[in-house]
Each structure stands twice: as structure tokens, then as C-alpha cells.
Length: 314
Ligand code: NDP
Image (cartoon, rainbow, N blue to C red):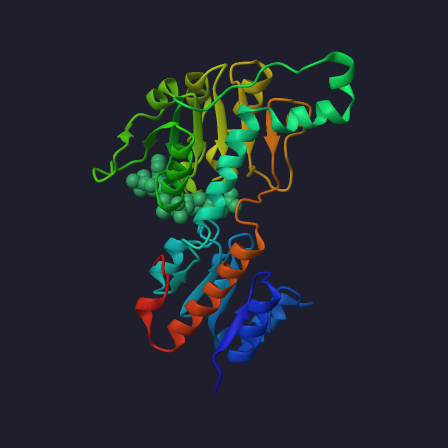
């Protein structure tokens, strides 16, 4: 008997094919009547396959009382109700590490795009302004400038390695200092912002980091400072960010993530010192494929009795 697996998120075709081959899969995503489907197959479900974007509501865990594992596509677990899963003894597995490089590359790309005015200057050329008005204003360099990384886990460290190549001085803020790291740890985020030219945010989302980057942090970063967020929109007080940019209290921003995706505050659209991305940090073919493979591997390891091979959060 193949284990019953509920497909509760949109998964890539190669993941879907692998799951269909190995398990009795049930589609919640396209189901015409989700409640009816859950009443029918919920009691048999042993695994839920989902994604960071689709999440796993507590109601779904309740509808599937025998679920053993939630296997999610993505490293962020803020949408998975991890504590509820833990209380129910459900394993939560995610797809860390395989995306470190590409997410760090997006952070570096936003650092370069904002400091060197890459997108604004592209628009300048296309609008014929170079010919009419001459060279645009000078940009800012990176060598010797201090970059404060907020969150210094797997991806934060990859960002530090990459920005080190550009000659940046790396410092970081986390709740717990990491004595094995050669970089200065700031227990006080406002102090780090005051001392930094740029802040790169790469913490998890969720309640513990809600609006961590608030007005005080932005004001400390200052009118020459640049904020790059590749973490979660919830980590930055978005209204405070818009106000800081409008009032010139913050120098610029590179944003991959937003509080209410895909809604983006329209006030940002006209700002030349802001670079916007539609949540693309892990969105390369290679990384998304590897993330998908890891969902399949996590489920296989669980059902083949290899719990140590499951990339589990709880
Ligand atoms: P890790 O768990 O390896 O690292 C998280 C880091 O954040 C740790 O250093 C942790 O340190 C720090 N942190 C956690 N809570 C706080 C807090 N309240 N204040 C300050 N620091 C905190 O995670 P990853 O590096 O693998 O991933 C980080 C996040 O990046 C993901 O959770 C996800 O939200 C986001 N992400 C975004 C993507 C995108 O597409 N834009 C793609 C992939 C990931 P400590 O516990 O000591 O505080």
C-alpha cells in the first residue's frame, strides 16, 4: 500500500511526477470542493507536500490527524505553523542549503544594482536622457564600506563570503553571537545600522522578526544608507520604509520581498533609488530543481525509515 500524500501546494512537474510514482497522491490545490475531499481522504493522509508560498494551515493538520510529515518546498517555515506541528508530533521538513548560493547572489545583485544605479541608469539610457542630458550622477563604490548583515545563518554567511570579494567590511546582527566567525557581532541592531553603509536582511520571517527593521533602524542607517531585503516582507516595517524613502531619511532600497505579495506599495514605483524584484531570490532553474528534489528526498527518507536523512526543522 502506497502512503497517501496530500498535495497542498503548487509543486514543479518533476516533483509532482516523482510523488505520483511513489505515493497515492491527492490534489488539494485543484480540488473543486476542498472540504469534501478532506472529509474523504483526510483520515488516511500520512504526508502533506506543500511550499513556503502555500503554507500549511492548522486546519489542514486537524483534517489529517494521521499526518506524520509536512514536506515543504522552500527554506522559510513562517507559513507552516511549526509550533502546532511540533505539538502534534509532526515532522516539518524544508529545503535548506541548496538555495544559499542563488539567494546570496540576489542579495549581491541588489547591493550592486542599488549602489551603482544599474536599473535607474538603464532607464536613463532607454529614455534617451544620456544623449540629451549627458552623464547621470555618480554612483557609490563598495570597497572598504561596511555592510551589516541582519541574520547570519546559512544564507547570511554566503552573502558575507561573496561581499567580502568586493572588499566590503562585514559585520552582523543575530540574537546569539557566533564566536567562531571572524566578523564583529552587534547585539544592538540600531548601533550596527548607525555604523553601516548598507544593511542586508536575511533572517526568517514570523512573529520573532516582525518589523525588526523599524523606523529607528532606518534612521540609524541614514540618508546615505541602503537597505537590501531578501528575507521576508514582514521583517521590514513597510510603511516606515516608504516614509523614510519619501522623506530622504534613507538613501535607497533593494527589495525582493514585500509585506503583502504580490502587492507592492505603489509609492515605491516612481523612486529611482529603489530596485524591486518579485520574490525571485531562489528562482533559478537549477536551484528550484534542487529544492524540488529535496522535497522528494525528504519524503523518501521519512517513509524508508531514514529519519536522519530528513532535512527537518522539527
Ligand atoms: P538560518 O536558519 O540558517 O539563519 C537564520 C539567521 O537569522 C540566524 O543567524 C539567526 O540567528 C537569525 N535570526 C533569527 N531570528 C532572529 C531575530 N529575531 N533577530 C536577529 N536575527 C535573527 O536560515 P537561512 O539562512 O537558511 O534562511 C534565512 C531566511 O531567508 C529564511 O528563513 C527565509 O525567510 C529567507 N529566504 C528568502 C528567500 C527569497 O526568495 N527571498 C529564499 C530563501 C530564504 P539567531 O537565532 O542567533 O538570532
